[in-house]
Length: 223
Image (cartoon, rainbow, N blue to C red; front, side):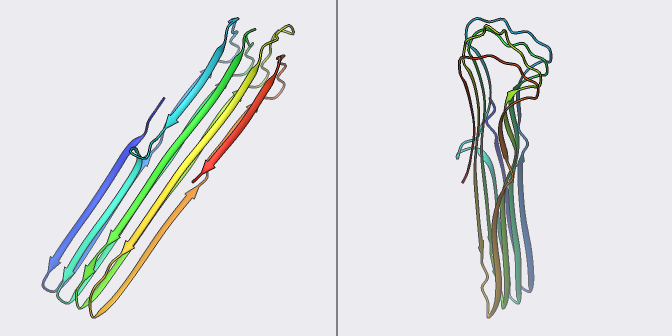
């Protein structure tokens, strides 16, 4: 099991009597890889329960967090930009390889991938002309896979259950606040989130598996 915890903070301060320009950029990235694998052509012989599981679990107190706060103050011109980006690319898999012979007992295969990305950007600018811009971006990608590989087999007399489950949960939060003050002021704030994660439960090609019951499911939650 892996619990990602990555944080990046950027704080910018620029003050002058004339022209003041400040920029704050914070980037946090996690590339988690959690793998549980039965090698190709293995023979499993257990009569009891066999469990294969892989988990990556971020929490709202951990996960990937990026925060950028900028400040610029000038008597004539104050300009500031703050950029925060939090990204996660988690690869989580629990699988058997090619040509694996399954045991007589119950088999449970599960992959669970939980990610949390939080990006926050705040810009401040002050002066006769004040310009402040803030951009925050939270992104999730990667894959969650649970399953049997190609050409897996079992005894024809096998009479135990087979359960395969893949669960993916991604929480993306982005917040952008632009600040400017002056006789002439301009500001822009852009907050964006994206998710391209895939979640898959599968049985490979040419499998010949006997079971009392087969349960398969894949669920993805995008928040």
